[in-house]
Image 1 (cartoon, one colour):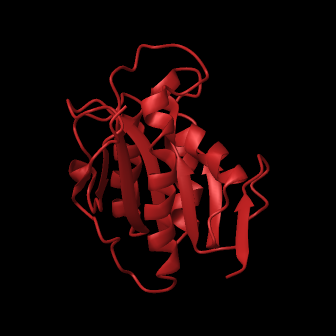
Image 2 (cartoon, one colour):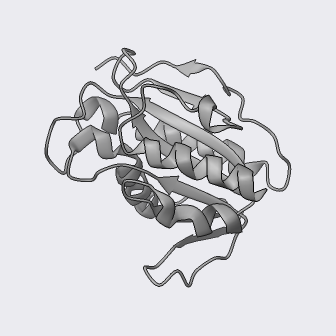
Length: 183
């Protein structure tokens, strides 16, 4: 399978595919930035198939145009949910209320964004991967080892979705918890 993966530039010029892999988080806050770190990881470990990559930073309404222009958005973000750090959960939210309550504070903007898309009638298919973390207070630009360990597993799950191509199929573990590796 040929890789047709692109990274969206700051001037928003690249848009080759109908699927966007969107990493959300604060790169300077260690594990809280897992979504952004995951986009960087994919640059060195490309996903076979067709998807564009975007470092969405801390989210918000500046991402509206991406949600309007892609048929499918796969979001990767951190959550404080009392699960073991590194636990991956996958959900398919249809409404703003479907987003987990334990997501980081910047995700209030994502929930508002989804609400606006519903009003506009431009809601794409959203698949949300949340990664359990221990803290949003740690500062640093490196992920903790337990979070680094799950990146290949997360990539594999996303490859399953992208491999489905034009089909709108959930990944095999949709709405299920994937256990974090023992660290």
